[in-house]
Amino acid sequence: MRRLVVLDAPSNLGLRPPTAGSVPGCYKLAGALREQRLVRRLGADEGGVVVPPRYDRGDWAEGDGVFNAAAIATYTRKLADRIEHHVRAENFPVVLGGDCSIQLGASLALRRIGRYAIAVIDGSADFRHPGNSDRIGAAGGEELAIATGRGQRDLTDLEGLRPYVRDEDVRLLGIRDYDEQRAELTELKIMNATVGEIRERGAEELADTVLRTLEGPVTDGFWVHLDADVLDPSVMPAVDSPDPGGLLPHELAPLLRTVVRSERCVGLNLTIYDPDLDPDGSCAALLADILQTAFTG
Image (tube, helix red, strand yellow):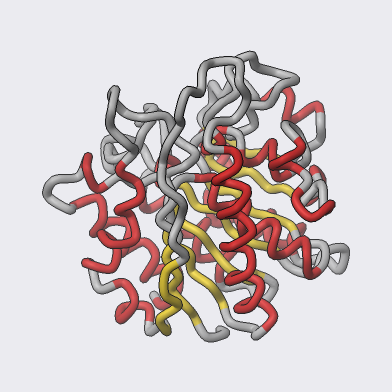
């Protein structure tokens, strides 16, 4: 495997405040994973930090579009610069978020280079956009829609590169069986598999099937977006939306291991885990174990 480089992207710009006057705690994700000695356990090199702008929704109100949009656009470019550098150097960036909007940094970076697919391992589709919702605002719940070109132009068309990822190059794994956006995804022919389908087929078999579709010559490679809320809240309660019916660690492990060990996989990001909701650090320990197993186990 190529040289792993751990890079912090501690942005919480894409989430709504958990309570009035507070900010989402997912910006502490990278620190909590480092406290688990993740860099050493992966045998990775140090990639430093891409510092985000301050979280400030100002006088934003419902109906105003995506809040923090200008800051997210600025951060997306900045993060893309760092990721692009590592991918071109044939390093493997492991990006520690942050909320899901950091995925846009990876998608923009890879779009600059060529045509790349994305394997999204997430408990929700994050496909909210003006065509299917009147509650646009939090980019952390909209990043897949934005990456595929749906939404306001100041986020979907940075550098004139819209879309960053084509619909047919998305593989979405681990959404809940009751996900409201699934019908639209299926109509658009965006490949998706629910938790129930993963269990029915077997995680390893499904991962192998998906990987074969990602390793074709159509694209230059693929990125992995891992959201901690793909796990069931019985084992991962420290997320902003702990919805029941998620994967268990022994089901996530073969999915993740299969895709990240492909020679066509060029990087991974981890998002949404909130240390403020994990006072004993057990969720951080679980995530560190899962990542170590995926890369070295």
